[in-house]
Amino acid sequence: EKRGAELVSETGTEPLVVQGVEGRLAQVFVNLITNAISFSEEGGRSAIRTEPMAGRVRAFVEDSGPGIPDDNLDDVFSRFYSERPEESFGDHSGLGLAISRQIIEAHDGKIWAENIRPPGVGLETPPAGARFVVELPLYRLGKHSTPARWRMAAARVSSSALQGVVSPLWPWS
Image 1 (cartoon, rainbow, N blue to C red):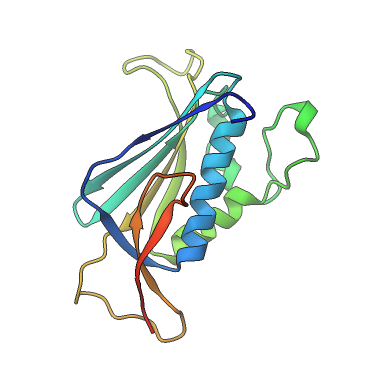
Image 2: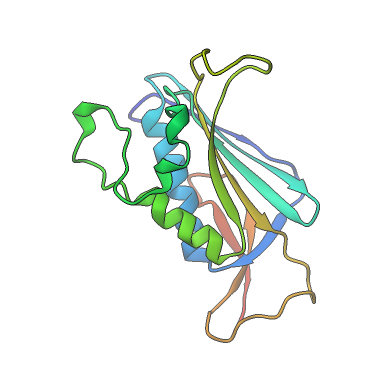
C-alpha cells in the first residue's frame, strides 16, 4: 500500500489443497508477494493466480517491474544474488528466493522465474515484469502418508495477502 501498487487475486472458487508445513509454505508466498510489490513501480500491479493441472497446482506471482535479466532467471535462486536497484542495496540479503526454492523442493515441488512478454515476441523486447511459478502436488485424501517427524497441515492455496497465503484446513498429529 505504501508503494501505491495494486495486488490482484485471480483464483478459482474451488480450494486447491496441498500437503505441507504451513509456516514454510506461507514463508515462500509472503516472500514472493512482497518481492513482487517491491519491484512494481509506483502505481504498478502485482498479481497472484492459481491453476490446477494433472495432480498438481501452479501458483503464479507476477509483478509489473523491470523483469529479470534473461541470463539470470535461474541465478535469482542462488544465495546472496540480488538484482535490486542501487538505492536498495543492503536492504535485502539475497537469501529469500534461495530459501524459497529449498522449501518448495522439500515439498516435492518446483519453483522457477520467467519474464513476462507478449506472445510471439523475442528476447529483444523488454519484459513487462517478472513471473514466479510455484508447482506443488495436490493433496489427495488417503493417497499420502504423513511423515511422523513433521507436524503436517493440509493447506488451501489462497491468494489473500492480508490473511496469509496458506490457510490450514486441519492439523495432523
